[in-house]
Image 1 (tube, rainbow, N blue to C red):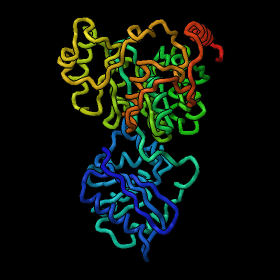
Image 2 (image 1 turned 90 degrees about the vertical axis):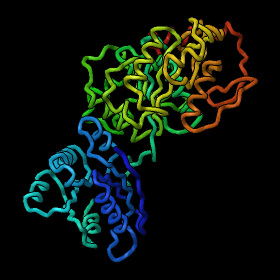
Image 3 (image 1 turned 45 degrees about the vertical axis):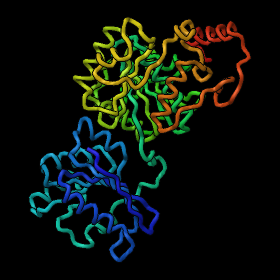
Image 4 (image 1 turned 45 degrees about the horizontal axis):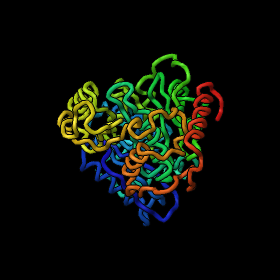
Length: 436
């Protein structure tokens, strides 16, 4: 749906964000050029800077529209001539659910059409071909809100979705470590959302106790915005924000619109969003799986795991190409009689990442809640490389001595038995619901 992002600078410091929606490229370009011309210094200048995002198709109201509205545009400008009924339905929805100003454009100038637009909530009707001062006049009547606090958002957010081929393949452990590494190495705002309902344990993996959860966000999704979301998040010592799974079984299954709204609001406020889905395929029609998301499919080298992975790759995700990456977890070369070539033939595609088995690296007996920020293992190093690749950083150099502890280089001076006792205390406290 997304086509391009144009920004024009004017002498003024005010900024208007505009969503330009229309299936006809020529008409859309005409309007975009007129908008940019109106923002340039001159007698017809509107005196504002414009941030224009183009959409080459009318968004689907149940899936794509909530995401678009979460970007908090000042103006939504819609082409009437591609599909008039759908365009007016879009205008009506935007006018009823968003503070954005709705405008329309058309080569037609029928009185009946203008009345329908007015009733739908459109504030301006731009008739093609445009008179020189039409656009500038329309922009001048838009209230300036873009410079107010809370309306800034990252220039480009990335969504990383972790999905398992079956329960128990280690999705949460990988997703939580990935998110932790992403936050620490990139230095950018990162949010981990645990959607592995009803028994997600991402917070447990991180040794955290959280007062609120995804259930709070999803049950009140109609009033969810950036400020509300912030009140629900817990912050890890690394700087990672976490929206945990609920401690109890949810009262009801949230609709896809609620999940979409949560993702949209998250993407408007964070550079990176990591979503732990467990093995939930019931969310495949949500915006978690739209074309902009990066999907990490976590599997193991077992017969049923590889069979499930093959079905998902060939039947559901065949068109994702580079935005699908396969992760073989608990990888032991030659396990179950499957060498690397046999696994890739079974999957019908290469394996991008291999995470070693913790039992094979001597970490198999480690309690779940050992602080991940303090851990230096082959598993963590492997997942860290995944995270660094995801945010465009070069591979990390291997540390020969010591490890990084919450951002500071320290050498471990504790004996293995002391580390084990500490981890056991942390795990027991978390399970009992105590703070650690």
